[in-house]
Amino acid sequence: MPKTRILIVDDDHITRRSLSEFLHLEGYEVEVAECGTEALQKVEQNGFNVVLTDLSMPDVSGLEILKKIKAQEPETIVVIITGYGTIESAVESIKLGAYHYVTKPIVDEEIAMVISRALEQQDLKHENIILRQKLDMRFQFGNLVGHDYKMQQIYDTIETIADTRATVLITGESGTGKTMIARAIHFNSSRRKKPIIEVSCGALPESLLESELFGHVKGSFTGAVADKPGKFEMADGGTIFLDEISTASPALQVKLLRFLNDRVFERVGDTKTFSVDVRIILATNRDLETEVKEGRFREDLFYRVNVISLHLPPLRERVADIQLLADHFLSLYAKQNNKSMTGFSDAAMQVLQHYPWPGNVRELENVIERAVVLARGKSLTPEDFPPSLRNGKPNGTPQSVQALKKALEAPERLIIEEALKRNNWHREKTAQMLDINRTTLFLKMKKYGLLKEGEVA
Image (tube, rainbow, N blue to C red; front, side, top):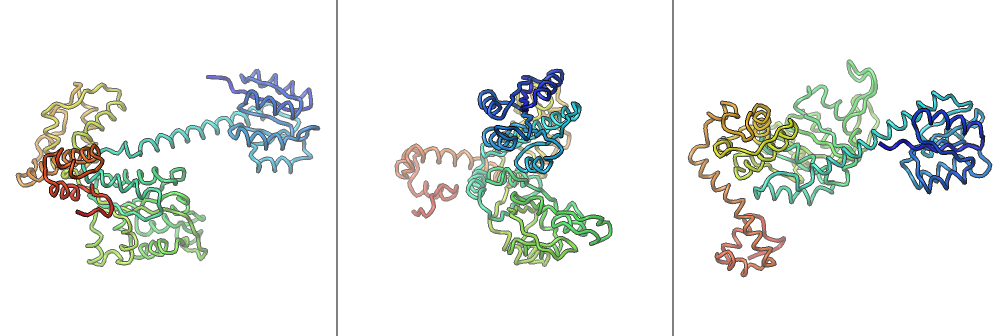
């Protein structure tokens, strides 16, 4: 790794020399400048990781050096060196972007600690940027696995609504990937640099959930020993994802409705009103319309959250995607476990495609992870799966026929879409290419969501 480059700027020869010698011994690459003008020239020509600059110099002040460095090289760490009589100016330098200030006479160990902590903080910042980039890449649309036409329609909808403020309700059985879809919406929006805060409403007692979401003030209930901000405040500028929203209490539903209407709330036990900019995504594995009819979910809240609705189909209705998902998880867990895997035997894939998957994609992922960890060969076989899977009851005849029909829909949609593209969406030419009549083509385009907005027969 290249050495950390440090520039020392001070019009005092003794200070420059002593600091330079000490930091050289500490393993840094050091240069010096005896005035601000020289310092700015060196920064422009060479660039430095850290600049230590005296605050008071005859030509260019330390504050001017700080301002110009931050304007040109905002990642450069600037530490101000000051005398006891200019502490107020040193504090002002912190407001302008200086990392820290040290007072004269300089203590070697103190300056070494300041530099070390500044570099650690910078490394952490860079790691967070890299992590954020990886998250952005992970949740790009191309990385969402599924060729089933229903899933493709969902991905198209995500792309359309991701960068809006619209509330999104994601429905579907447990394990279908609702959390993954919520994260994809967030990371494909302009809010991606702000947090996505995930809250499982069913995992917290009713007495604590309201406090967890909206915060509380000291003394508002037993155990509230200090003021505490809630998840909504923490998600300001970003997204809050409320999973299992159907379990929310009537009191919490009222607060959620008020926030959705007015974008304001109060902490538990407080009268002060807070306003935050938060995008809300909700999810449930229950039928909210049934919950409304049976009096467990507010009707006005249902209509307020059901702005954009995404329903994730269960895996048993996406049989064509099972191999695609299985290959994805095999590659993922083989890499994590340092194993070289070539794929699945035909018998193994047959087992996967005939199992009904009550736990959906999450269950499939767990099965593949377990198989990769325990497998002794390079190709997974039925023996690598748990007995419950190998001996599981396959789909019955009616379901199998339906599954085959569903399985054929995905490639049929792709064939039709490809033919339309090749013919610039000219229906007559496309129908001739596919050897079907124009009416049949139109009906299939309508079925698969391939009609353009406002298009009629």
